[in-house]
Length: 117
Image (cartoon, rainbow, N blue to C red):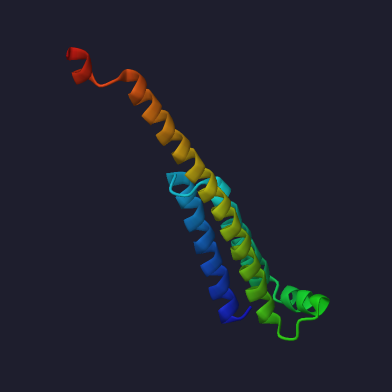
């Protein structure tokens, strides 16, 4: 096993441990952590079994095998950004609806100064 391979495996295990810690402490929701776990597992597979990257590159017809990693992670980050955009849009609508409900509740409750007159 090469020195760089050992460093890569240790780095990936540290990354996965960090993700697990964020999940346990509640700083990262599990639905968002799935993509990071998948990326870590893919890095781990490529670090442990180095020929897998060459096999995949040959299968997809990619000349330079490491560029396949960048293509894969670019695609995963693109999907993640689309997901975050959908979540953001959904939350925007929920905030708008909540603001409207609060305005209606304040209108029903009325102003206490007006009732005193």
